[in-house]
View 1 (cartoon, rainbow, N blue to C red):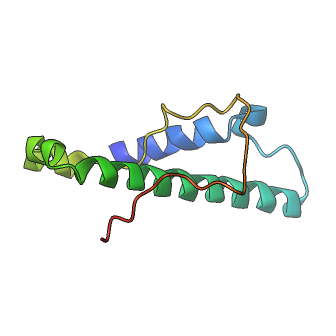
View 2: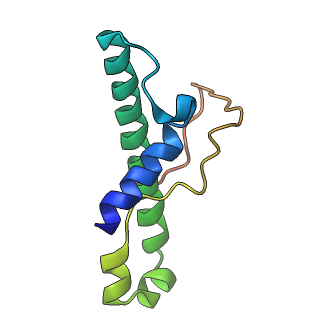
Length: 102
């Protein structure tokens, strides 16, 4: 139940415009809004997962984790996201994410 509530609160946070309502009566526009929300959800979870993996790849942090801590890990957090700000996208730069498989 907590996971579903957390996911819904993340959806409300991401899809904040027009109070989270679909502003159009056109099916195509509603579908486009839903697909954009799904893309943002997937991107958020992916980046958060990579950040968690990077932190836990350090032995200092991994050794501090108990079984209960590992069981409680979730990529559904969004406090580091600013939905109101300006984001500069530079397609010539990549996020610094190390190859964790190496």
